[in-house]
Image (cartoon, rainbow, N blue to C red; front, side):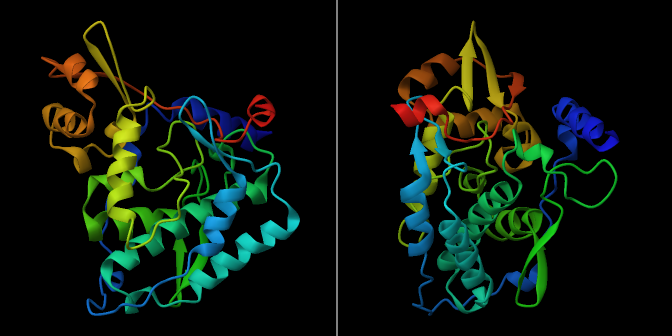
Length: 278
């Protein structure tokens, strides 16, 4: 009962505690690559699972059909993760590495949900160690090159500090409605640059990313949690938004210099009954 109360309290308090979002902390052992390597990591198994269970809803949000995931496909997902963690990512070129880490993060997040399904929100999967820790991000879940890794390690100690590209936030998916979409395509060295920009455009031009009403702009809380990745101040964050905004959004943002509000929907990105019927 106490743990349930704490879980609910954290969900309520999370918007207030946005400053506690993990910092980008460079982990030097992962910052090695072979620039001459032409080796490719096979993500076809992950692509097959996306093809089978990921649905693009009419509202522009992709949702995963966790409930429909068959037992053999749960084993397939486990096998895919095992195949990735058995590799040495450092032998690949840097772009191949980025695709490796992003697909690993997204597939591992799906596994966390599947292992605890049914669940209304990833925030309720309180498996991270420590009192008042929420969600699964702080738990060591996999081992790569002899190092135990958390989801937080992949995003905040590898992807963000090594690539230093704000578009990283549009690639990783936290299984929530408010998050940038889980893309229908598995990332590869050949497509990740294009899809990273495509994801940025899609998220920024969707109301859960950016909305403007009566001259006031509301942004996803991603832009508050990780503000330093997008800019030093409101102006630079809004410049980032304008870079990927449609002509209509840019017109709405004309003259706006301050960010007035943030919001985020932590509900699970699962397929609904109505979506299955359509």
